[in-house]
Length: 420
Image 1 (tube, rainbow, N blue to C red):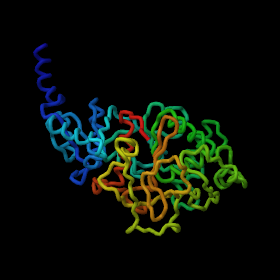
Image 2: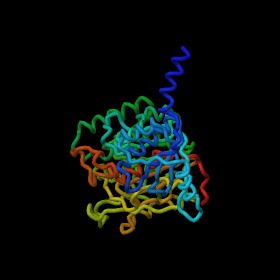
Image 3: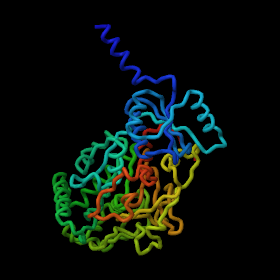
Image 4: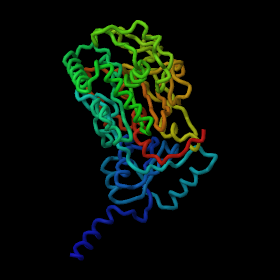
């Protein structure tokens, strides 16, 4: 029996134990064949109880970890560009990064974050950019919705993404939508949950969900939202105790004094906005930079990423790691945020200066953080309900999708106290 165990270990251990060729480097600059799957391999290594070095601003935000044959085989299978370095070679890179005159740093990733996606049961995975890219990168996640949030099941997770939801209880302003069957299914699902938890109407149930998510973030959670989940989340917080919903959605009229009663002190990111209560109005508020207010179109719509100090501002540095600093714009029900309606304490990470609009931003709530990213799909400029889902095998190096994946790995980082 002992001989059989010894024989098994002799076969198995070389697959998992580090070899003398000490480190694997995953470059994240223009040489990388598949940026998106590279995040997935970093997550996979963390799942196998191995630390990952995130080399901030080194070759586009590269990853490095101990070499092992099993890991190398997985990298090859996923079609990722990599190199194997000796201890001396890798130490030379670390020495270069540690130079105080160089805007780089090494961020230790210690444990894979547990990921939840807030999404209705009627939704399909390819309808949301985050679920689309996590599936492509092979990063696992769980689906949660109103019931799980209200039952306090977010405590099991580190990171939460908000599917492009309408948290105001107006069903995404669906009065003008053609897909009536889908609209009816969403309403029936929301009304069933509202009744189950003894709320009087959907808008109040959604507010209850929003407040539970705020508790999750304040307690140390990480929240990421795109498209309409960004502004409707804050609108719902500001309108606590105020009826902003038309009778077409909940049977009673909106408060004619609703605008004066909004409380911006309760929001994460936005201030001084005007809510739109018209059920036929596709916009929820003045937060979003609407199509008729923008002078850019597909060919000239770009936003710029800010460059932060890796050693002094690690959080925004991690969230903006990329091989490009000029990113193609893309639209959504909420496309971009008017700068004058963003709170001063929010960290602006990407903007279209010519339009005075913000595309990508981050902030702190209690012990946790949130990130808001305007638009629906980084590789579908103006998405429509009848178009085919984005095939990321045609966009393996998408800089717009990289920003999503930066956020997914962010909770794995060994915490460093910001120096500014």
